[in-house]
Length: 169
Image (cartoon, rainbow, N blue to C red; front, top):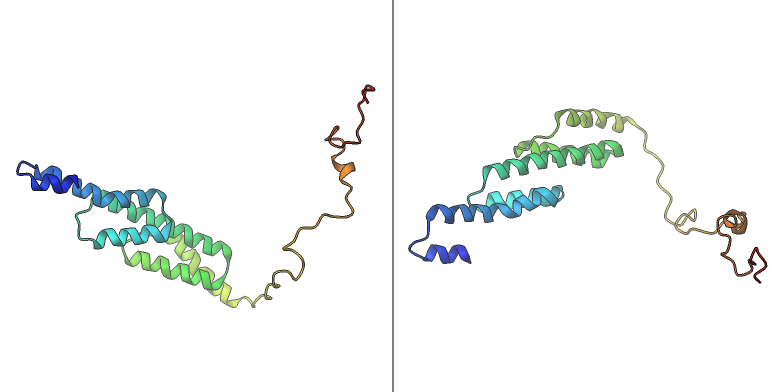
């Protein structure tokens, strides 16, 4: 609103107005660099570049650098999970980032590419048991542990049946 008012006035300094427009256009991108995960940062960068407004080149560079770091971290998580489908998706996303001018760690990308044939060669594992099959979704109190014996030395006056030591019944 202040920029619109300054543009309407005859005495508005054009350089100050242009600087304020650039700052407003890049402020959401600055916040996204600091706080947003990969997908939101990618969307905010695309929206900022597609808006047609003048952007601060340093902020766009920082956003691309942060995208590279986040894409590399996502690729590393996929490598550590050792599951073929998510790994292939992460490799495709990292290669897409490189096509967009974002630098993904080349060593991590090569490590991921080298893992794909290994995972393809592994025999398929057994399917996981459905939830509730082995009773792992409910915690039960173990019957073989006596809580009085375990916690008694730690909680001297916890029970109402405990009498005073010095005869103060």
